[in-house]
Image (cartoon, rainbow over all chains, first blue to last red; front, side, top):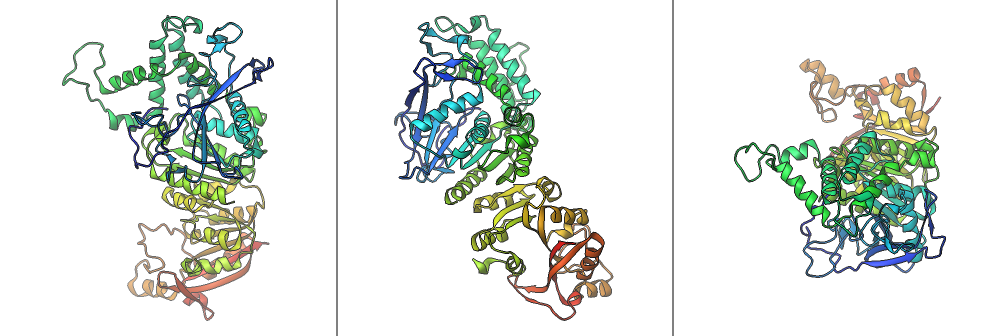
Length: 387
Length: 203
């Protein structure tokens, strides 16, 4: 997902928030991963907004996508230039209303914003894991989130909400812990990657691994594979936009010049934009985390994992009420993929609502201000909390 | 809240048993489903093709899917519902008999309502102007009408024999004031009713 939020749109804000940490699986056995490997200890960075009600029935868990973090809304300090990544949605009176709900967002394991990942210190070697870090699945991410929820002594979630890879975690939550999830909102997501999505991820990973600084993932004491990561981000960005949004945003406009200069610089605005996005990304993201998270997304296959290949069977144990949302111009996770999951939910008599929002901004549309999405989520949550 | 429900929808609502499971086909902004959920505590599902209307439904807190009723109805298991309601939509369906079959598969009973093409104004319009009728109930011109299936109350009765379903209840009505008010038509309904509403069951 991209970074869009410049300033808060309504003036309402979740206010000052604090990043907190929870460490578990400290005993030698650690956390058993789907691969069979064990991880110990495991730390999760998380943030909360709003207040927990007395019977703990107003909890919403937000699940972030590839490059997100626990900082969903509000500011760390009044001096911060930018609020959290979903500040347009999370706050007082907003789509996810922090006056009503207690909202939690944690950084996924294998990421690099406070939770245990490849850049963390391996206690066995006292060095960063690098690629000695075990491969993580979407299921492992959810397992760690469940440990956090248990630690907070919360038994049931009113809703789990997330877009893109966050949406995969939503679906995983509903399948893995059907009794703990009352409602769920998977946005712009899929039950499994298409070959197209895997292909883009693989090209992005190859860009990182081909960077001479990558050094098989053990680069933490030396120069980092910045160029590889920047290119990986540029590739990702293309898939988050759409033909239409790129035409409207850039067309064939030139950057700081009036004519072609017959050289290999960033002449077109779209080139300059992608390079800028790449540069910005390397300041805050770890290349190995990019490898691990994209791999987890490629591995994700709800039908394979929970239905022996049948998506209908995969949803048979789910109990949540669903709101599925797709976007007309999303070609990374196109509407037909959302409709497939809706169909499987219907065949199981699940309570599902579905809306395909007309938007030109491609996959990233779920992060952009959109009254329709705000109203959908607001109405759906109000109904879920009344039932 | 009752007052906001259209007259024809009030009649449909009166036929629905409390606590039942209801599927609304072409449910629009969900007025009927919302009313049934609040007043009769039904479990509701709706299907609506227009995005803006779907958003209105979900905002209200009712469960609605965006999509084509002919396709979406196919995914539901047999007898998943007590009622499948197709209000003011049958006349816009390309294959009405397929839709009715599907309704009878997914639900124990169906409700179908449509504007009556046998109404006297329609007959007069055609007889005296020699042109395709345009009335308050059927306000479109021949070239831009979504109502591709024009039928009368009598046509529907005959259709029930052909397609194989039973008519359990029927209401011939005349509405005014933008459908807010209306009355039952008992004398020569096929001539004087503007709308017909039928509760149908399996043969």
